[in-house]
Length: 86
Image 1 (tube, one colour):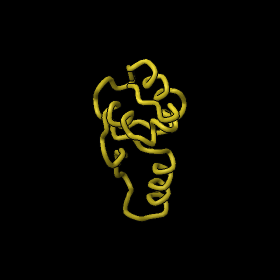
Image 2 (tube, helix red, strand yellow):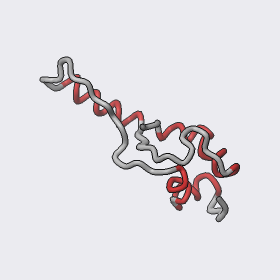
Image 3 (cartoon, one colour):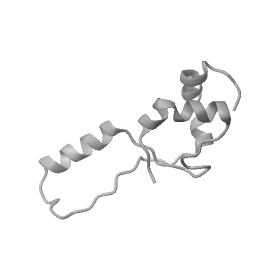
Image 4 (cartoon, one colour):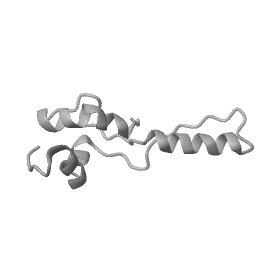
């Protein structure tokens, strides 16, 4: 399963960091991806050849749990100003 990274920027992660709960996936890992990555992949498909009737499932490169995302120091700095609680 994958979600847009942008969803985290629109309040989901901030709520999860402050409440301790991320309802979208529970504790399951998610392979997030950005809309820019999807756009680039689709542009390549549209400009390429041999993709007729093909089905592609786009996901991020690595699946991370909400706890792993929240533990990333870059995320903590953006959303909590470096605070050490979660």
